[in-house]
Image 1 (tube, rainbow, N blue to C red):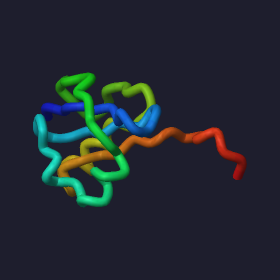
Image 2: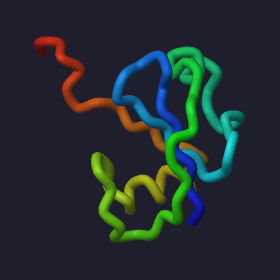
Image 3: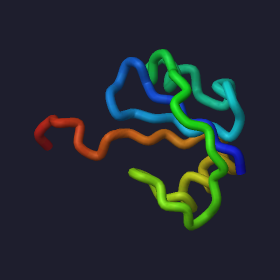
Image 4: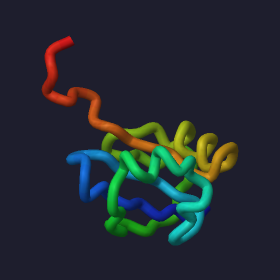
Length: 81
């Protein structure tokens, strides 16, 4: 499965995986507003079992198939719990 990864220009360490280049129409409007301007940073063939830096490839594939996108947000935003 082809995968396109965009970084948020508004939120550090926040990435959006899409199943098609420029497929932002799959996202809810509010999410795109919060994500901010996207910048394409990576295009690759996503296969189950492939090691990804901060996401599970099977989970990413499932979300891409179900909703057309996968949002990766930082685990620790630096704010106290």
